[in-house]
Length: 361
Image (cartoon, rainbow, N blue to C red; front, side, top):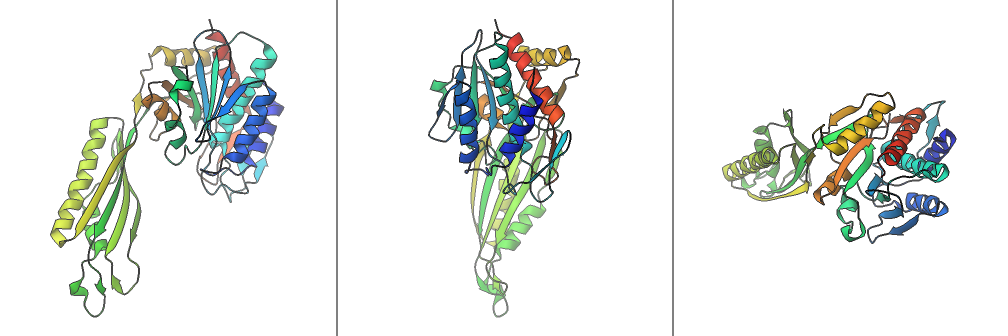
């Protein structure tokens, strides 16, 4: 049922369009043209998200993928083999999430041509997923009827079904010391870098346990080599599949920096906010089981996965929509050795098509 040529051509056309976060207009125009040609009623909200509606029978279902990509993601030149498509090694490929977009467009083409009964669909292509699921967070739920969603945005095996994703807190720490000449009067200064280093030394970073991780991703301090640095900025995160664990890690960060600031007589601003809520579904959840059954019917073994990262599914879940990320088939997302198989994209498109048809009533 799935047109392999359409998948290959659509994907290659998409990855040739630059779409770093905040600059998705080219991809949006491409998708809009495809949806309008297919007769899909489609609109664009104030944030740039595309929302399409297709009538059907039974409970409505969201199909979603994001339009933005990470850097380095400009002037992508894809190398297309017989099955595997990869980047040249200078940029990402953009399979995250243009493979997901391709698969959804292929599903819509197949449904239109088959004329089989299927569930009502709400097609949502979001902006700025990579910078903090910003697009989905601004969706107007008054325009959305579905209570279930498939978010086509999980890397790895094509048969992936994500059942859990963490709560993520982000922290911005500002350490204020006192500037001084590093050679003439260093004793008059308070090194904000030394204060930050003292706090960081006392923290455990990386893997905390099977559900929890900590990371400091950015440190910026000082302005000149021969000056005691007065200001250092730290951008950190704590994530866990359990909200209380994530909160405890945040408190550890705060206490560590407070102790160091007091020790050196410095000052601090500590800001923290919940970047996204987590979710967790049982493998026996009926929605999850219905996805699993569809892979089994295709004689494929579903691959259940607890994700360490977030996706638009977290944003949908926070709005009360049961959103399950499923595989798009790509490997090594956000890396210059990213790749995807056409055969996997075709398999996933077939799986989604089958699911939409078989769960209609």
